[in-house]
Image (cartoon, rainbow, N blue to C red; front, side, top):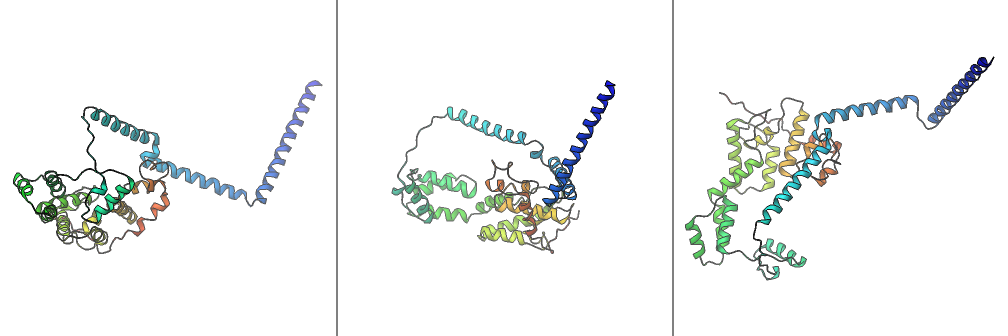
Length: 326
């Protein structure tokens, strides 16, 4: 019968497809075995990929950049565009005049820095601004060193002074003034985040005052920057009596494992002393594709490499923080 013939042909076709599938499966199994890959290995690879996918999902939930990279990059681009447009708008209202320039070779050298700067400019063919006047000099150097403008009497006395090295003498006088210590104690206090409040820990008034006094003494005794950094990183003891300990106290993370404190100190050290403001980003994900427009070093560092830095953070066993008793 015709229907029986159609059914028979259909069954034969299905049987051929099944045999072909089994044949291909056997060939694939042999190829995997010859290549040293077993079905168990495939299962392991699949599980590893699944775990990596779960890790990536967790990272995206913690990192605003990984959640929506385009939002972050677009925001940065918009900021740069706003700055450019503002600069163009302001410059349009300014009466810009070319300043008179001089050949760096004609500027007298007084110290090593002068030789380095002016010789390099002369070699590169870069013109220099002329030497500033005495009135300009006393205003600039007083602002730079003490954070205030000179008084009228100070300006008059300086302009009337005929001494050859009066500018050098002015610098020495300002560095020895109390205002110099006040200005730079504020600068280093901000750099070391002496008054910064953390939700995890607080230095309290006694700790902050001890830290401020340590900073002032360091400036007054002309302590070098590298010595200040070394003392802060390696400090130990009571933060009320040893002000340097307060830097480590500020990096302490008491609500988690010790590794969190190591991470916190690595970030604080990199930011404060190395100018690397992206270490906290690298502790969550690779820098490539994220820090390319922000930090050239960070764009080349992987998350695993960043994780290798915190274990070297020295957290002294004797470091302690006293509690403020009300």
